[in-house]
Image (cartoon, rainbow, N blue to C red; front, side):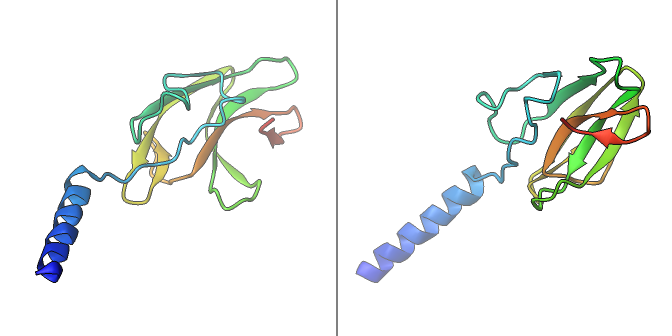
Length: 126
C-alpha cells in the first residue's frame, strides 16, 4: 500500500512539473552597461523577451553594438549587430537550450552587453 501511495505521489509530482514546469533562461543583460531595457533583473519572470538599446555616449567611440557572450567564463564576445550612434534589439529566450538570441539572428548566448568601437577598430565592453 505504501509503495502504491508513493508511486502515485511521484507520478502526480511529475505531471505537475511537466504541466507547470517551464525551463527558464537566466537574466541575460549586464544592466550596468546597457542604456535602456524594458525588464529589470528584479522584475524578470522567466523567459519573456527583453528589449535593449545601446548608444554612443562619448566622442571617444566611433560606433556602438550589441555584444554576445557565450557564458563560459571568458571575456570573448561577438559583435552581433552594430550602428554608428544607436542600436536596439529584442532578446529572445530559447527555453530548450536556456540561452538567448537577438531576434534577427540565430546564434545563442548567455549574456549580452553594449559594446563600443574605438577609433583604432577595437571593440570594448566597459
